Image (cartoon, rainbow, N blue to C red; front, side, top):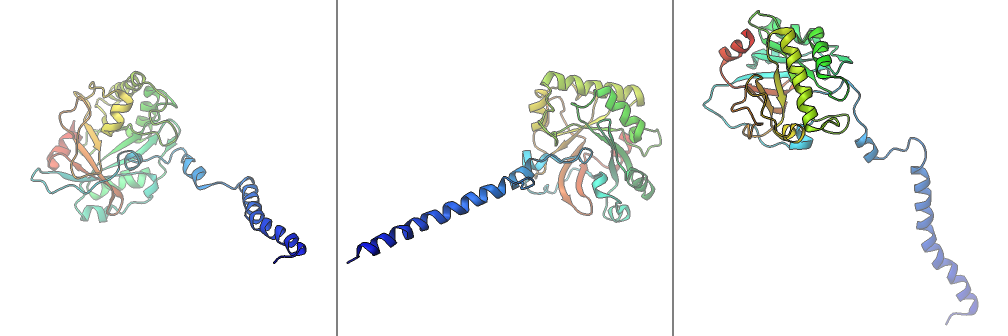
Length: 282
């Protein structure tokens, strides 16, 4: 039987068992409120630095990744795409593995030029590859015409040497914000048209359009107006190329993985090497 004194002493003991966790939670909340105490969610929401976007960056987060392509009797030609994040590329290694062509990121928006462009663009050419350049579009930062001019002026042009591919408009998910860059579907179509018309006026060639079918549906309304002139480079990391955007009955290039040997991004040109040469020749 408890005496009055025992009963008096037991009450604070029971309260302390409840008070201790409460004190810990309070202390934790104060620590998290301190400046610089970012959470994992905060870090995930932080956009990458401008200029670091690369071809296919949004494919896995939005479309996922399946298996590698099945063997096909259709002749295809292996190629790669690279950007500044790969730094100096081992072109001899890629050539020895059977890679015959390459696209190199030249520019982004009107504010970024690839610091490794010379090593990548000239290095692939020197090893014997057919090569070209691509532009990562940011339609919310400048007009299509302005970005096309910037691209051509900084490595994205074309020459009739038989080994230079026409430039590529890389139009895909925005890594810095809203996936369609804040543009309506009609405005996005107009922006793309502004870029492709300007590129053709400057170079005499129709730009290749790189995109993913799901992005094209969401951000252009699955516009069918580019297939007649602009070759399609479609991104899908799976066993088959899948559904194509409206207007293109066939694809020219398929980006099928971001985890291939040496540089990550690997692609298949839809045809033998002579078809790659034909695209380069104009």
